[in-house]
Image 1 (cartoon, helix red, strand yellow):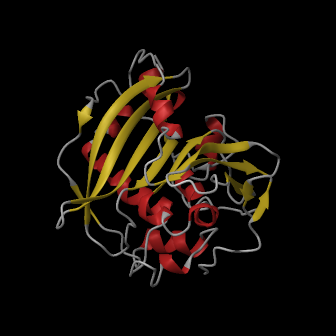
Image 2 (cartoon, rainbow, N blue to C red):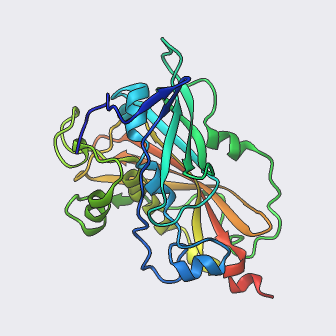
Amino acid sequence: MTTDTTRTDIIEQNGVLIGPWRRPRNLAATQRGSIHDDATAQKLGFRGGTVAGSIHMEQFPPVLLRAFGNRWFETGSLSCYFRNATTDGEPVRTLAQLPPPGATDPQINVWMERDDGTQVLEGTASVVAPAEPSMLRRKLAEPREPGEQRMLGHLPLGDVGAPVAVRLDLAAREPRARLDVITEPLDWYTGPSPWGGPVLNPGLVVHLMVQAQQRMDLARAKAVGLYGAIEVRHLAGPVFANHDYEVTGKILAVGQTPKTEYLWYETLLREPAARKDIASMLMMLRFMKASSPLWQT
């Protein structure tokens, strides 16, 4: 692993930082009946089992460290709207605009592309408190017609219940498996960091935050779900491994497209002992109509 933020494999070209080609793994390929399973994904019109969007977010820290420095792990955000799915081992690279010289609260555009030029995701990244809204805040503010809600109509808007206690132990099976094959490893993820102990990359922050779904009744959708968009924001970071937190959730909106019903929700990660907000996440989940018996009538 490395913590070198001046790596020669990150290219600066016309004001854009371009990361190296990487081949992220579909670690959930054996989850039968999920969007990551080849047979299920192909039945729903995808090329194959998809790589989770949170895995793609793990590829961005090197270019964000180059753009913003270490403070990205303290007050930084990464806001991603997923455009096209990738399959296991498919080459992708990250791209990010350089912030303007001297900017104190900059926000930049970021994106990821496949080796055929297809855009995988688009979004924004920032530090501190930029004046303009993030990519996902703009998306959330767009007008929408809820339409008929067969899968998600039972969900009430607002808070979804009591906090969920969460902790990410590096010795646990899933974090260990993800860090074993991460496309952009940093020493800080498994050992000492400038803030003390090991810190979490964006994908593992998502892994903590989605546990707020325990308070949502999503099983009633009876459908295959997938990440449509994710934003992670450090409020008083970084988020540490092997540390006790609690997470709360709030449902913000529901809607539909011809192929999906979708849900927007926000979570807050808090250090309960200090009553301090550490990070937040904004997520849009899509549920495929074609996969649910509730849409087969």
